[in-house]
Image (cartoon, rainbow, N blue to C red; front, side, top):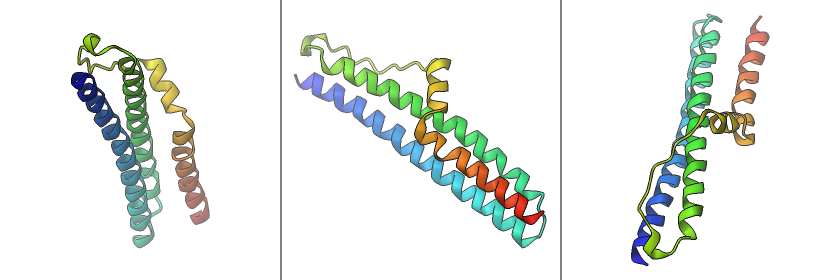
Length: 129
């Protein structure tokens, strides 16, 4: 029974790391976009705003990958949770296929953050024109 609890704790710590990584990625995205806004306002060079799209798109891809990994570990947790203590293999492998990644790419928490941020960038670009 101790082995089962230890394995579930290992899986839970992986889930926690994925969730923390997603939070940090979103924080870095906002920080970089705000910095690019500050650069474009300081130098009055609006072309810096085009650069703001790049980190948003790249971090959107990375964030959705971590979300799909987190979901994979949650499924692993659910399957290991119902096993008997003598069936525990301490398996920690999670494979994310393209279909799962695309579901995460268009998940509601992701869509409430990155497209809104892209809209804000577009709005700021149109105000300056």
